Length: 325
Image 1 (cartoon, rainbow, N blue to C red):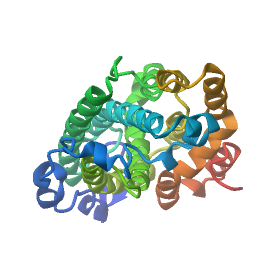
Image 2 (cartoon, one colour):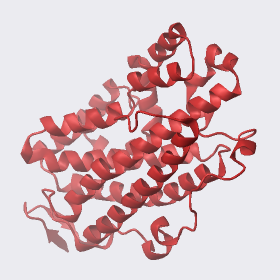
Image 3 (cartoon, one colour):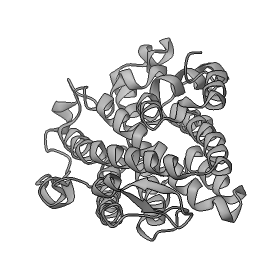
């Protein structure tokens, strides 16, 4: 049995039974978490053995100039990065991911949206609003503690995503929004998993783990929706999706040179060292390596959807260094 889409493409009826955020009422952090995400009273004691953000996740911290500067500078730089990450998350959830969810919930996509998919989208929208709330709440506390000003710095990534949408033809814009959400949600689940493996200040750890628990379900949902869409698309739509996905993945792994320069200089790192650090982070080779390792979950979702059954897509992503030929 099949379900007819508005474009008359046939899709297996079994798909209508998928696309749920299982046990959302009893598992979503917005419904069940008891954490208040307040900085602990013993935060300075915790920082003797814990971090604001895992140093292993920020390779530039291994630079000799930063290592020589001491633990206080290390804490300042990881606090800077945490606030930047949380401010970015707040913007991402509201302005990018929830816009991507809206095109599903309000059936703006060029295919039929089953009721289960719509209902899960509305639940996911609620989750993302809560993620923005607790990200902002924690960012404000850390920014106050370290007197971090000039917030929120608009991340290069957000600017680049908005520019992509602005130059996308109106007819294809809903697909572009969805693809931004798909890449974001499959990447962030992996990012949060890596972050949560380190020893962090307790309230940061609580927040990230609550976020991760939700994002694992969101990643699966977006992967299922992508698979459904891919089966339903015509050749013209698939070509647009392939090229746009490649650009979006690249955006997610570019270095934000301007912000990084400000962070390093604000922590007292010498200009010559700042130039060296930022330069090494911003090379095409470094960006490509980050993209290949950081987009594993996204690429896996593409594989499962049959995306790489196309020789064109294999060639496109191989040339970009994302998959091995």
